Image (tube, rainbow over all chains, first blue to last red; front, side):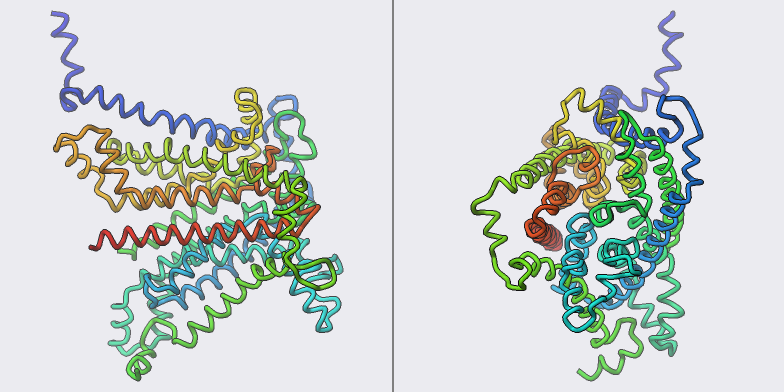
Amino acid sequence: MTAIVAAPPVPVDSISDAGVLPRRRCAAWLGLVPFSAYVVLFLAIPAVLAVASGFFDSTGDFTLANFAAYTNPTILGNFFSSLWLSALTAVVGAILGALICYAMLGTRAETGLRRTVDSASSVLAQFGGVMLAFAFIATIGTQGVLTKWLVSIGFTTNIFNNFNNNGPLLYQIPGLVIPYLYFQVPLMVLTFMPAVEGLKSTWAEANATLGGTRFTYWTRIGAPILAPAFFGSLILLFANSFSSYATAAALISQGGIIPLAIRQQLTSETIVGVANVAGVLALGMVVVMIVLMSAYSVLQRRASRWRR
Amino acid sequence: MSRPQETTRYRAEPGRMARWVILGVAGVLFVVPILSMLEFSLRSGQSGAHGLEHYSAIFGGSAGTYAVLFQGILNSLVICLITVLIVLLLLLPTMILVEIAFPRLRGVLEFICIIPITIPSIVLVVGFIPVYSVVARIFGSNPWTLAFAVGIIVLPYAFRPIAANLAGVEVVTLSEAGRSLGASWAQVLWRVILPNLRTGIVSACFITVAVVLGEYTIASFLSQNTFQTALVLVQHTDPYVAVIFAVFALALAFVLLLVIGRLGSLGRNRRSR
């Protein structure tokens, strides 16, 4: 009697997974545990800790006082520098990258040219950081090849060895534009090329049939279709330079942009545990990134409409 | 030869001339810093003469000076190995499992794997510092423990090639076929699924290696000696050697990428045949 009463509600569900399946499903769920545990321990917890640390003071009490950092003119200046540096390198990088994609249009994927450009851009897009800083020290540093060449042809104080009367350009925030472009342009080529490749030759033919020129093709067909992908890549480029740290760290010992300001906070007051102002700055970066990435995903959805 | 010239006014592509001017200028601009690095590494002092002495200094004689650099490279290689294992033993099985058993979780997994791109490493570092005070208590403060953190940074890069490969292979159909022919799950995995994912797995591993060798932010904040942090240290005392190793690393990255390219095209050829 009890068996009959107790049984009905349960089997309805499990009958569909008849036989051995329930046990196997359980095993399959268990299979997800290791990766989930790893992600929780080393992604979720650090991310939450980073952001949450801004809400506590050094004794562990909840506080909003750390947000006073955002009234500090130096911090605000750093945020401003980060934003314009990222915007400038994103826009210039996107335009130059798009030009290179345009130049590649109509080349076949199997040719040596395409393969060279593809692998060169993958390497160079990853070539941020310390080694990139070295490359530009060797090029436009005080003893750099270009700097010395400019001196040798008569420009004894050129833009590279004295910018704004503040010494070498490379060791100032505006000087970061040059090395940043060195990874922004290849990243643009990588992310924008698939969209350019998606342009169908039939559209160009249709345009030609209707009497259009190359100019009308680009203004009426090419540009509108590529626009969402272009702005999507632009946002990605902005995010990329906004979050990059190592290049700037290898070149500039002071603050100046937000990642460097976080370094100053972390290294100057590393009492055991977390430097709390760094947490507030990290939160600021995350907010900027969330806004950017939401914009990016909206644009991606629009861009993929033309992919099929 | 004259026909393409006539129709070129109507085509989308740039003219021959425009194409080579753009690519030529871009090529020169991107090669100059690399050549400058090479030139810099060949300089002998301030005199302007060139020679191979900085290169010979690394391999001959005063190896003690560069001990920190070689130790850093060794540490980075160990971290590479463990990070690749994280990709192969944690990420890859999870991706296959999700594809076969939980297709509805595919979006969730992708979202998780993309997150590290949207959180700057410098922000993660703020959170890694307290986490690693616990890690250090359990495992000790060894360089290899960095692999846990680097594995997270690597997720987006490792995820994409494997996911692209998975999308092109009918994993469910293949595994059902294998199962109905009497293979065990282990056999299906080892002899059907993994061989089909070879290209994706190999590229994921290579990209992982490249990212690990280039990682600086986390290592420097957690005060571990890796290739990149050692480069910065050595650069203060001997900039030439730092640049030489940077050139080596760049060349290695190019070789890795060429290998990936070849493997990718091998896969493509096999499928079309």
